Length: 214
Ligand SMILES: [Ca+2]
Ligand SMILES: [Ca+2]
Image (tube, rainbow, N blue to C red; front, side, top):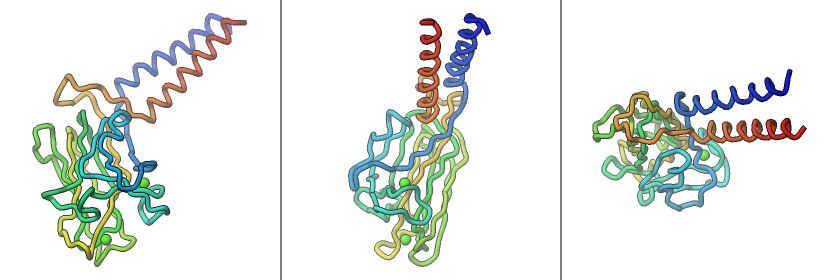
């Protein structure tokens, strides 16, 4: 391969990467690891995943339990394991997403529910699951497959504290740009693919620089 062709190939990859960042939807999963127990999540994931939370705190169990990733999950800031429909854990996306799911842990007879709303506050869909008794080791994925989701609310529909409480882990959603309600919304670049693209670009520039020095 000539020196010119060797440079052209990385340029083509570079262009493909830049195009893919704006054209391709991406799936993001937040595992809630690495936060400090009882500290509010708030804007912790705003820059990386364009989602902010209210009434949610991190909790590090110190070990893994059935259904969860790692050792940490989230709880309601004041109602802990028993958020209500009137006072739920809230997640707000700064641009529309689709196919939102989260794993509900330790779900007993009081259940777990996620409501999903559009930018106008209209209910797009909901999902709920029920275990038995106190729900020890019982976990479920609640999932709303719709598009145009801007807010989710998480709560225990048959609220029965202190007998049955639950926790939440691994929020997953798909970022979209083509069908957003507000055309001025920023385009989301999901963190994993952005990080990967960044590494790819560094490698390409490094290779190009090495070739030029020869
Ligand atoms: Ca986790
Ligand atoms: Ca429970």
